[in-house]
Length: 450
Image (cartoon, rainbow, N blue to C red; front, side, top):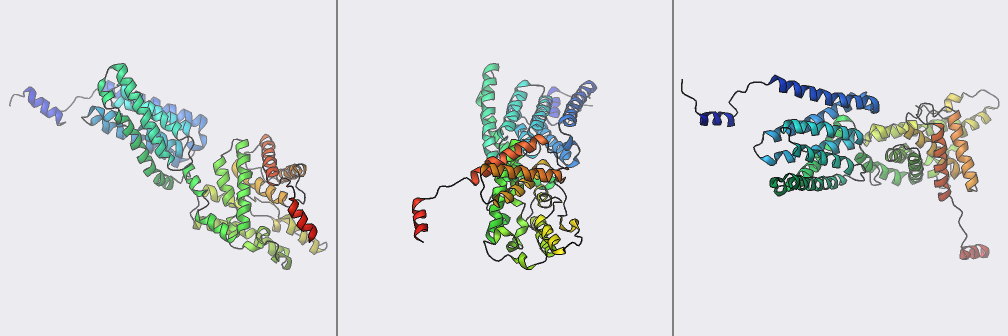
């Protein structure tokens, strides 16, 4: 029955104990806005991201990132400090979505979150402008990653953009608080980068994603599996590096994923580590064990590098997207040399061609198809006695035509136009590798004396 005084009401309000009547109109408006944002993102995914839309794991990742940043925005709105709104890390969502999913989708997500920031911060445009500036800068700053430390650089770029935006808005609106505390924009960028670097490994592992950063780590020559290939099968290692150069150039020509293609090519023959001397590139002119073996047994030994490669990839925790290339880079291709040898030795008896074909599957993507072609072309051109540009081009187009006619490219989304560009890229690189060299006079003199 005590009379409630104004100071009592103020204390109750500050403690959050004063009940507030629900404004149904406001709640309905927020619900409609969020529904429109979700619809916009859904339409974008339906039109431009069908593969992602079919992957529930990736959709869950996208939702998790948006919800976490929206939650941080809500926390910032509850803090009594006026500058808390400038610390909302929209750039965190931009960096994570760009690296793990897609940079264009990250732009849509930034727009989504900027509206959320505006809603939770009382529809104040100064917070939304800074959030938009930092988010879009985050997307553009990680578009080309070469190493994990580039995320730190992206954080500095985001911080600088936020800093400039806050000073500009503060001067424009005559709000000296924004100018005075513009360092909060720099802090926002650094926080976003630190959180992104810390979260990336866990998100990659949890959702089974192989990001560009992970691919760059795999392409490092010091990776244990690549080091093992170099030390135990150096010929196969050199072959893989040449194939990687060929595949990367071809992937760039047809707008495929160049980094993924290169890393797939580096790991496609790791299975040869188990029995290196059964492969010609590791024999160095010595005795060939296949000369003393039946063609069927030789075929089994050659095929075994597929199974061995998959086992090694699992042992060294190579991502599935890289592991896929090991069985697919041969598809169901015929091991022609031993099949021909078996036909000769059969002396007219029937030889089942299926016994001399790889188990497959055929390449399932444009990148894997490029690795198959690069692998076949490199081996074929290396066998030429006089690799002139004309003979190289003839051999390249012959190999590509054989794979096409054999149906090895049927399951990949590669086109006839792509095949023409791939052939041109192969010829350009191979002509540089096998270019004509002049004979040095002193070498010629020593040869004459001998």
